[in-house]
Length: 114
Length: 227
Image (tube, rainbow over the protein chains, first blue to last red):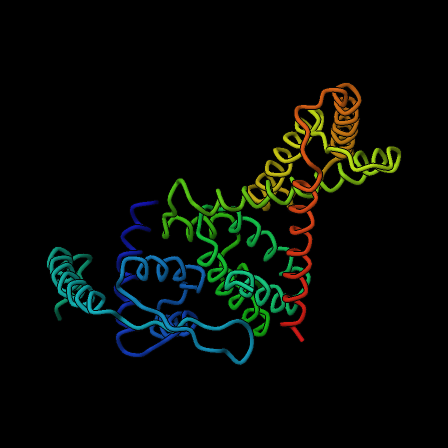
């Protein structure tokens, strides 16, 4: 289902922006953090293309640092545009979450607002 | 050494740490990305990032498919899609120009060695270099084939690794190769009597010599930088 993956990608991008907002991180660290917080099926291969796109659109900037083994690693930070996008995402997310919760009130006997 | 060359070299050196299974997959990915329309520097940056994923997965004892999925081509396509390279790129133009220039100088060198030198020795006097129709036609065929083969292998790197070629495929490759050799020989034989124009030999020898000096020099520079 393509729509589902598009929808999910948008949310994932928001989560990636938040992780980078908290800390200067490289690709693998982002994956690890997302995994620990519950998005377990996210792999580095999933987020890498998203990182490239976010960087291309000017939401992230990256700095290369040497790594103990292997090639230099790209550490990401948010640009001003990225910070704006993050707040925008969060506002949208809260609105969406509220609406969905309202729609699902009492669905299958579960009251989400309890 | 240019930036790109240094990056290619560093990626190559680091890729030696890959195990055999990963090396096969990594090589396919590299081929596929290098013939894509992405700019060279960007391509090598991405290859370095991917190599980092490979080396780490190895370190952690994970299979690479757990990280980038089982469909390696889809993974590469998702990267290319997110960067939306331009349809026409300066890179492909530059790369093809490189193949053309290298090919032309190599073929010129061969032509001088095997067709001009014997004549020179025979006449014992400085004679003009004549460019034959056969040389021109053969060069065009060889260079077009070279560009075609490089692009075909790159675009189909995943398919080519997966499928074990049948005996019949080898037969056709062999047949094609023989036809190619016979064809060029036939052209040389038939058209070698048709010189297009002749040039003072120095106009040919000097550029060819400069080309090989430059090649030798850049090779030497590359080696000395490694020491």
